Amino acid sequence: MTIQAFYNAAQKNEFARDFQFRVRVLGPFNEDDLLYIKTTTLPGKTISNQQVPFMGLEFNVPGTVKYDGSNAWNVTMWCDEALNIRNKMENWMKEIFDDQTSSGKYGVPVEVATMDLLGKDLKTIRKYNFYGIYPTTLAPLNYDLQGAGKPLDFQCTFAYQYWRLQA
Image 1 (cartoon, helix red, strand yellow):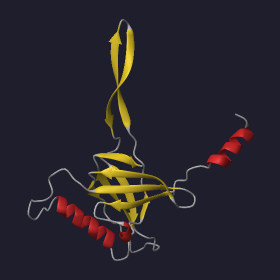
Image 2: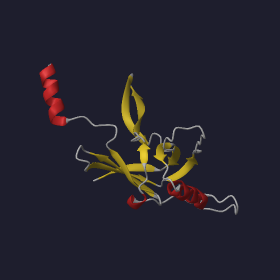
Image 3: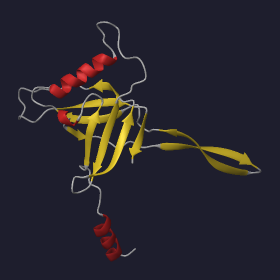
Image 4: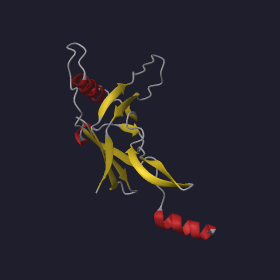
């Protein structure tokens, strides 16, 4: 491929940018909650390979699927001033396991998360749904009296069962 051909292809197809995403729904959160998610990943997927030997040859056949990172999907969120997002996250975690009553939702989770990938016009070009999602870790908030007033953020880790590309 020549430099000109690459340039023409780049003009035609553009490049995906690292900020072109939005998480619209996350369990009990919806678009009205304005989640302030500033970083995350689009998880991968792996089909296991199974080798079948026959007469000195190793035939490769597809096996089961694994959703890479389904046990630890990380997002980083900015905090709103009143800590509404964090409060809602804490309440969601308490619904899953309440350490005061030793009760909670022990069944298979039914909550869904929706992540949109956006075009340069900020319109959704692909939509992914994460099924059976629930929070596993709510990271601490770090305060500093000598800080420069930087907006606070915190990380959350979620587990989910599988994801699907929504048509």
